[in-house]
Amino acid sequence: MRHCSVQVRGLLTRDELDRYNALIEVGHFLETEKRYDHVAVVQKEIDILILPAIERLKEKSRQRDRDTEAYLARKAQMEAELEAALRDDDDE
Image (cartoon, rainbow, N blue to C red):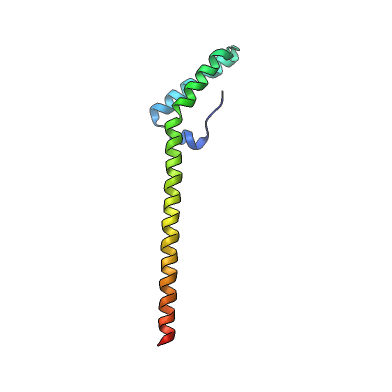
């Protein structure tokens, strides 16, 4: 059984996480019984189950990118204002 990343698991809802853990347990049992035909079905269910959490992770990343862009724009604006203020002081 392939586990999803810790980041994705951290974004699963309680219900999704309970279902994920149950499916992993079933998958491990099937692996010990060498029932790999059924393991593939369980793995497919896990892959479908974690899709919303993957989307939440992507959205967090996009939000972080937007926040960084806004911060850099504010920083550049403040630096430009400071530079303009220093030029005004030098002119006086």
